[in-house]
Amino acid sequence: MSNAKKVSDEFYAAGQPTPEDLQKASQEGFKSVVNLRSPDEADFLSDEQQQAEAAGLNYVHVPLNSKKADDGLTNKVLKEIEGLATPILFHCGAGARADALALIALATKEGLSREQVLKKAEELGININQPHLKQFLESQE
Image: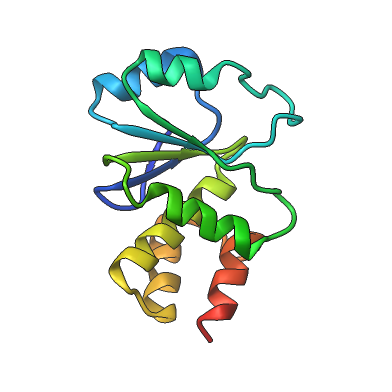
């Protein structure tokens, strides 16, 4: 997956994959996909779960609003990935929610401090004003 951003060895982030991208992700060693898109978004892949599973990938779908953070949904994503095989590919429409959630997952798993999260975001070019990440950072102050 050439458009996937490596956040850690376990967590990657990308925009919307095509069915071919899902096949390629599986061939490249990804084990799981987390879809953060809402079904009403443009170009939502309605059969993505079937496509992912046909490619041999575990699949989780937790729709997140791109404009408004929701602690409950962020926590649901973290709970859903607890048992997933890694590496995990998080994706959304353009990649901002995926970037945020992959970084939040890493921070939660490794117990990163707020400063460490900010440094990692800067290194990776992740927007710290993305609503879910901003809310997560505020909770760490």
